[in-house]
Structures are given as C-alpha cells and as structure tokens.
Image (tube, rainbow, N blue to C red; front, side, top):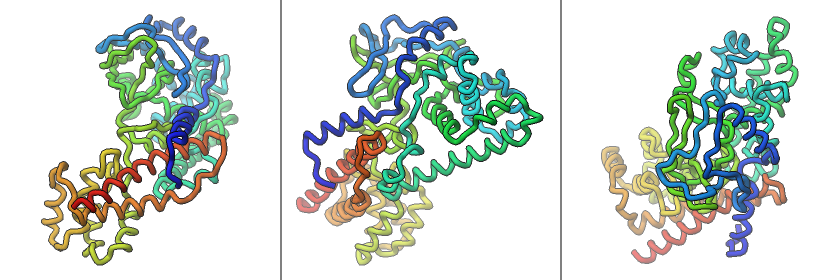
Length: 429
C-alpha cells in the first residue's frame, strides 16, 4: 500500500462516515417517536435528532446536558425481548422448540414475523424504522472479501458460516410441521435467506443488555432486548455511560457533560475497529482501542525468517498458547506493542529451554522496554503482518469497498507508525 498523505486521510475520514453502520430508513424517525410517545415514552427536552457530517443521523443536545444526568428513560413495555415474542402468535412454536432456540434466534424470528405482518403489527413503526440494508461483513462483495488479510478473512468466514447454519436450523424447524403449526405459516413462507439475514443482523447490531427484562425466561442467559430509538444513538469510544433497569424503565445516564449542539454518544465497549467492523459494520478514525492482532500464523512466518535466533520455537509456541498469551489483545496498538505482545517477543528470543524462565518473562513490568534485539524482532514481525495487506482492495464507490479500505488504512497506519518506532529504537540502542 502506498504512503497516505493528508488529503488522502481526509478522504478516508469522509469514507468512514459514509460507511458507518447501515443505510438508514429516512423519514421513519418521526413516525417512530409519535408511536413511542403514544406508548409512554418521553424524549428528554434537551435532546433532538440531527444529521451529522461524520456519523449521519444522531442524537443532539439542544442545550447543555450535565454529567450525571439520566438522559433517556425507555418504558419496559417498549423493550422487545423473548417475553414479547412469547406473547405473540409465535408462542406455541417457541414453547415447542425452545430447547433448540437461543434468545437471539427468537428475537430474529419475531422481528421477521412482524416485518411480514406489515402495518398490522403493533411493532410496525419500530420495524419500519430499521435500516433497509446493513454494512456488516456477511454482505461484503466476494472480491472485497477476498482482499481481506488472511486472519480477518477467516474470522469473517467463521461468522458467515455461523449465520448460514442458524438459517438452516431455523428453516428446518419452521418447515417441519407447518400443518400442525398454522401460526408460523406466514413466517415459514417468508423465511428466505435475504429476509432472515436482514432480521438476524438487525437484532445482532441493535441488541442491548437489559438484565431484569426477562425475569421468567425459558433460557438461563437471556438478558438481551431490542430498544426502539436507541439505534439513533451512535457509538463512540469517548462516551461514558451507565445503563440499568430502574423500576419499569430502561435508563441511560451519561457521566460526561454535553454542550448545546454536541452529539450525544453511547459506548458499546472498548472495541477495536476490527471488532466494530465484524459486529456492527463500521469503523472509527483514530480509535485508541484499535489493535492489530498477532496470530499464530504470523509467528510461524516470523520463525521461517529467524530460525537461528528463535530456538525451541514449537515448544515456546505451545507454551504461549497454553498460557492464553495469544489472544485478540495481543498485538500492536497506537501506543506500541501490547504487554502480551512483548511477552511473546521476549519468550521467542529466550535462549533457555526452561519453561520456568519463560513463565517469568510473562510477568515482566509492562513499562519495561524491549532491548535492541527484541526491537529488531518486533520490527520484523510488523513487516510479516504488513505483507498480509498487499492485496489491493477491490475498487469501487460502494460501501463494501470503502469500509474495508478504511479499516485497512487504519490498521496499516498503526503498523507503519510502530515499524518506524521500533526501527529507531534499534538504531538508538
């Protein structure tokens, strides 16, 4: 990939905004709010909806919002949970097959059934407000998918395979006894791949954790729900919020103050861009939680280049795996190599075959800098990882190309910055 200049970075940031999340169903927000207000919801007097240049639709503070203030209260009656589905015409089907269904399966079936019901559904204003299309990896064009780095491509494929298996499982359940289960006939007829993957994605990109919303559930771990209006709130790593069921309301409190005309964000958690891409279909520029993960394959390639300086490689690799040192947090961040990444480098260069000595290297202080030879190996590891990004992303103005290009540029930017740093450290020492 060529070195990116300032103009290119500005264009990339615009692309990041274009490809964030989903293609919204414009014009439905007003109908949704009217319906919600008729069902007990009151939008905070200091909040409104607005289009922002970086994120698209979002929630704006109309006047100063003070930190510590609860800015959203959603009546529990407007939460869509498995309890909601059990109160629908799918009740008998869910009871009969609940051992084979997960809470996410149930919500997916419910949302799709309400979509097929159309305006006859009580939940239609919410269902109609959901995006028509999404930007998660299951919707990637084939050429774009093939241009992903190997480890990311494998993660995407694993996710797609899981979705496909879920589709087949539900299709079999829906089609098994249609004559005995007339309540699912409409759902069974409309249960196509396109309809299913739309509903599954709507649920998985919008589910919230609402403990206490399903106190008498058929499932042990059933704390997910869909919350109308919440998808108007965009994610940002700067947000600091608390959520809780308080009485008969799902509430969100912001620990940060917001000035008038400032966008109000929520946080899904300290996710890397890769996690945001995989789970939600967007990335954030300059994300401080970003990490370019070091994989087992990267270390095997590294060993092929440095066999003489990495003794007992296979034993060390087995040791690192047994201690769970290789994980999604092992890699390069904007600040440098993670603590477990440093442990990997130190272990690989250790001349001893003593596992106790390897063990001691795992507990080196995070602040302890790598020495010259370790910096040299770290730089070589970065080059190995960068070689995975050599395939050009399929060009195009579609969201698929733009989103993947944005993600690749963010990760390559981190790697190049760290490569320069470790090369300088090698020269200094």
